[in-house]
Image 1 (cartoon, protein in one colour):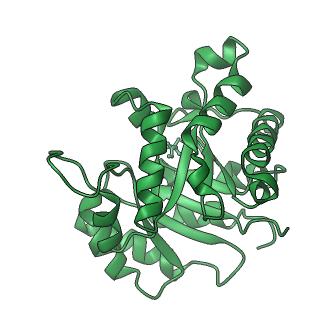
Image 2: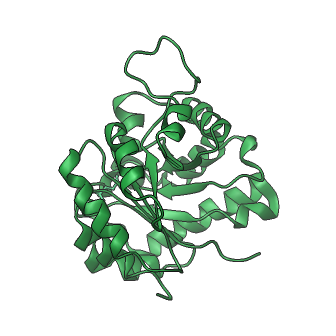
Length: 250
Ligand code: 13P
C-alpha cells in the first residue's frame, strides 16, 4: 500500500472578494509539478470564478461546507451538487467552527459526507479536541469518537481525507508538540484501519491549526502527517507556497 500523496489545502473561511483571485493565481503559478496535491477552498461565491481562474493548473478548488440534500427549501445553504457544478472537486466538512457555531453533530457531518460522495466531491473531514478536552486528558477519546461517527462506511473504496485540527490551535498561533501531533495522527490511522480495513492506510491525514512557513517543515515531517489544512496563511500566496515548500521530498 503506497503512502498517500501529501495534500496542502487552504481554507479561506469567510475571506475573499474578487481581487483575492490574484493570490490563487500566484499559488497556481508557483505550485510544484509533482509530489504534493494542492487545493484552495474559498467562500462559495468564489468557487466558480476560482475554478475558472485555476483551470488546467495543479491546484484544485473545494467548498467549505455543503447541505446533506440535493436541493430544497434550505435558505442560505449550498448543496454538494451545486459546488461540483461550480467546479469544486473537494469539500471541507465538520470544521470545528461549524461544529461550534451551527451545532453540527457527527451524525450531521456524516450525512454531509454522503452528500459529497453522491456529488463525486472528495470530503476533507475535520476532527479535533477543545482545550478543555485536552486538559481533561480526553483528546484521543474525543478525536477517535469523531472519526468513527463522522466517517460513514459509504467511504469504503472512495477518496477522502481527514484533517486533525485541535480547536485551541486554530488561529491562535499555538500548536501541539510534534509528539502530541504524532500521537493523535497514529490514533486516527488506527481508527481508520479498524473502520475500513487495509484501505484505511490510504487517506491522507492532514494537520491544521496555526500552520505557517516557519513550522510547516517540522510538522509535515511527523509520521502519519500527510499534509496540512491551512487557514490564515493560505490567504497570501507567499505564505501558502512557503508552507508547500516544507512538504517532505520536494
Ligand atoms: P489557522 O491556520 O488560521 O490556524 O486555521 C486553521 C483552520 O481552521 C483551517 O481549517
